[in-house]
Image 1 (cartoon, rainbow, N blue to C red):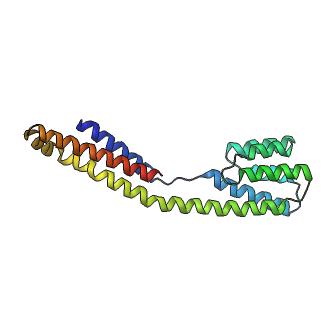
Image 2 (cartoon, rainbow, N blue to C red):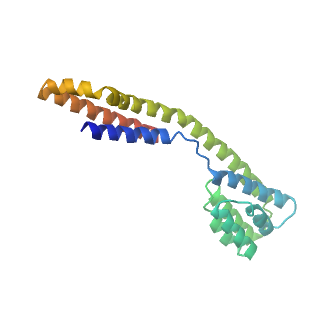
Image 3 (spheres, helix red, strand yellow):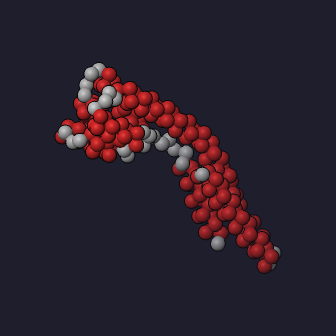
Length: 193
């Protein structure tokens, strides 16, 4: 039982510490660059299809590569919009803008400029949110890690003394381990939400 409790606490600790790693989201960075490139190409006088092809040519994600292939192949803008609707920040808006532009033929440089500005703001907010939650994840790792360390380094003597005390000692030991596991699960859950 002690081993099972220690394993559960170690898993919780590992999950909390693993969340502390720097996570880079290239999709959002690509999206910001992509929308900015479309806006710049449109302001320079390129057509929407040529702007899409040029902006998506540098994309590293499979979504932008697919949009590039469709733009080069001459696919309808609505179809390209359906593909780009999966972008993480402004996907639906990009899809709608492309469908409206394909149906009306209107000027879309200002729309894509605003979408690029919105994507920049949203990416900055996502970075800020991740940095603010890093403190919570680190606190969760400490709160879960201290009981694990106390079990690892001092469990043999303490559990042995409680076992020598009889049935009541074992009940106290089992209750303490259960409370540590429940506490670790609660901290893990709070750090995840």
